[in-house]
Length: 422
Image (tube, rainbow, N blue to C red; front, side, top):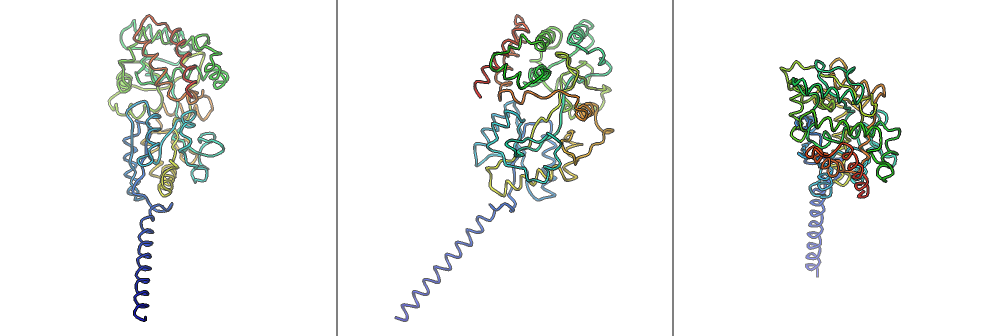
C-alpha cells in the first residue's frame, strides 16, 4: 500500500511538473503579444512615391535608434486605395501603418483605423488638420500641401495670368513663337484631370453642397461658369500644347527645369524632383490657376498616417510609437522638413522660411493667411478619378472631334454613376 501511494505521488508530481513546464512554455510563446513587447518589425504601406527612398532611409535610422525594423511597401500605380483594401483585408500579411487621403477614402477604410486620440502627438496637430471621425482622432497628417501653376519666372509673369482668356492666349502665343511650350499636363490621373477639376469645384460657394447636386444630376457641369472655363482650357491644351498622354510626370518636371515649358499645373511636392537639376538656372514660383475667376492656391492635407487596429497589441503600440517618434524626435523632424520637403501640419515642428524652396514658401504663406481654396476631391466617389474620369479625359485627347463641353458633360454624368456605386 505504501509503495502504491509513493507511485501515485510520484506520478502526480511528474504530472504537475509537466503542467508547469507547459504553462511556462505557453507564457514564453505568448510573451510577444503583450502591448509593451517589441515586435520583429512593423510594415508601412503608403502612396507618396516622392518620399519612398527617404522613408526607407528613415526606417534604417529608426532601427538604429529604437531597435525595431520598419519595412516600407510602396506602390507603382494610381490605384493605391484598391491595393490598400486588398492588403488590409488579409490579416496575416496586412500593413501596420497605412495612409488615406481623408474624405470618402478614409471613411471607406475607417473600420481598420486605431483610435489615436490619446497619443502624445495629438496635442501638436495644427488646428483642423487631424483626421477625425465620430470625435476620434484616426489620422495623423503627413503635411500641408498646395498646388497651382508652377512657373518659370523668366518666361511668364503673374500679371499675364489673371483670367482664363489670359491663360489661353499665352498658350496660343507660345505655340506660335515656337521657342517653348506655354504649358504641359502629364498623363498621371490627378495631374491629367483631378487637380484642374478640383479647382472648378473649389471656387463654388459651397463645394460639398454643389457636389451633392452634381451627383444627383440636379446640376450639370457643362452649364456652370467655372466648368465652361475649364472646357475652353482643355480645348486650348489639346490644341496648343504637347499631348499629355505622351508626357510622363518626370518628363514634365524635366521640361520645366530645362526651359522647354513655361508652366505646369503641379504642387510644391515637385521640389524633391526639381532639386536634382543642379545645373538648371530656372527659377520657379507658384501662382493660382485662373479657372472660374480663381485667385488662390489650392491647399489641404494630402494624406494621413493611420494605424491598423487589427494587428497584435504589441504591433499597434509599436506603430503608435513610430508615429510619435516621427513627429517629435530630431531625426524624424529633420526628415519631414529637410528630406521629405514637407510643410509640417504640426505646431511643434518649426520651419525656417529662409531655407524653404519658393514653391513651399508660397504654399506655407497661403496656408498661414488662410488665403486658399479647399481640396474638394476628397469627397468625390472613391476611385472615380482613376476609373471614371481619366478614361473620359483620355478619350478627349485622342478624339479631336470631342468638344470641351462634351468633356464636361460626360464627366458630369460620370459623377452621377460613380456616386451610385458608393
